[in-house]
Amino acid sequence: QIINQIKKKISNGRHLYISPDKSDTRIFGAENISKEIKKIFSNKFLHNICENYLNYSILNASTMVNYLVNKKKNKGSGNGWHRDDINKTVKAMVYLNNVDKKNGYFELIKSSNKFENIIRDHKLLDQNITDIRFNEHKISRILKKNYKKKDLIKFFGKAGTLILFDPSNLHRGHPLEKGERYAMTNYYFNKLLFNKDI
Image (cartoon, rainbow, N blue to C red; front, side, top):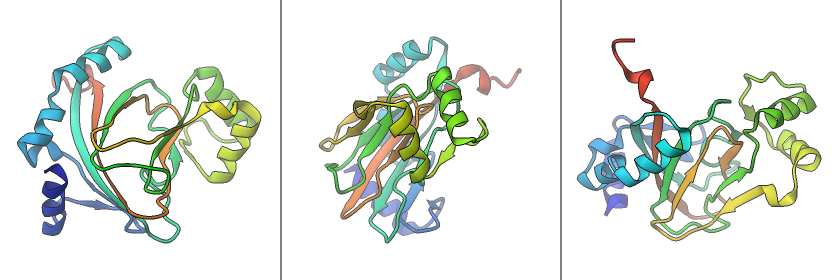
């Protein structure tokens, strides 16, 4: 049902972000599209888990839905390896269709958000700590030098699979080799950042 709602919104062609290679179409503020997405946006269970992890008051700034499709040399969801920030935060993502090793599974490097690991990785690559994007060659270097094989986690799952993750870890949506992927993601932030009195 949510996929059909996304398709309808995309067909209208308004308020969309489309990646340069046209493989990733995103709608921010998707909680305004339907009551079904709104339920995920305002879900108290997810909110409480994420707030307990961060240990400060949060709010969900937006629910983003995206549609990924295989295009030549696509970089996958998020436009390749990156971290959102070097500061601890959290997201909740739900696969809306079945996701396997071919159609854009989510992957993350475990513990790559620890301060000592951030420093170590950037030193190895001679890369500024504020540069949060990494190409394939750089990721291969730090995986070989600084991590174990088991630290690269790949998330496969059926429609409805929920993934809670800290995007200050290095992560990406794996480039699609075939098919398509639909997902929606809650973006949680420190509630103080949205206090108009500050």
